[in-house]
Length: 240
Image 1: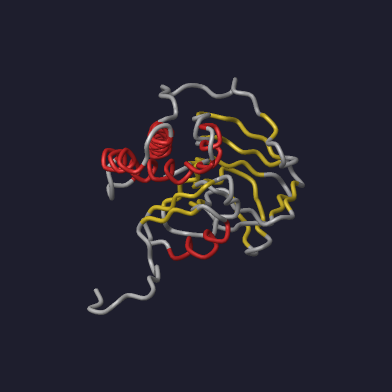
Image 2: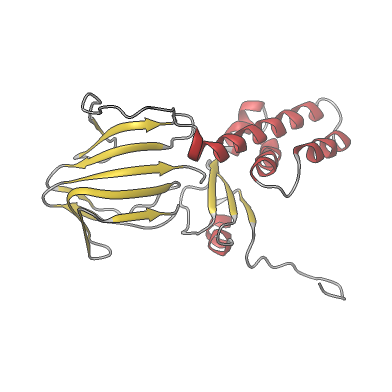
C-alpha cells in the first residue's frame, strides 16, 4: 500500500476477472491467476487466450437484451460474480441497487441481478453435477451422429447437460479425416484415445491408443489429420 497518492492502478495477476470485450480478453486473460476466475461475455468474446484460470462463458449482453436493455449487462455480470465467488454477496449488491436506482430502473436492475446470480449458479454447478444420473448400461443402441462443421467426425453422446453444453461422448474419426485450421475452445476438454491415430501437424505429434490430454479454454491444438481413423472418449465441461 502506497503512503502517497496513487495515480494509476495496474492489474498484474487478477484473482477474479470480468471480461466484456475481445480486446480486454486478449490483454487480461493471460494475466489471470492460476486457479482464479474469469467471467466473459460470450456475445463479444469468441477467441479465448490460453489460461490456467477457471473460465465461465456467459451471455451477459444477450440476457440483458431479453430484459429490455443492454445497460444491465454489467449488473447481470455482478450477480454471476456473487454466485461464483465469495467476494461479495447478492444481498449487498441488491441493497446498493435499491439505494442507487428509483422505479422503474430499480426493478429492472434487481431482475438483472437475480438473472446473473442464476446464470452463475448454473455454470458453477453445471460442470460437475447437472448431467443426469445413470446406472451403468449398454451403449450399442445409442446412435452415432455426424458432428456439424467437422466432416468425417461422428459422436455418440453418453450423457449431456443441454443447458450448459457439458457433455460426455465418444468421438469417431473416419480414415482420411483432415482439419486444416488451428482449434480453440471456450470449454475444458478431457480426452483419452481409445484406438487409431490422429496427427497434430501443428505440434508434430501423433496421438494413438493410450494417449491422454486435458485442455483448458483457449489452448490451441491442431491442425489434424487421421490417416487410419481414430476413436476417443471425451468429457467436455463448461465453467469448471
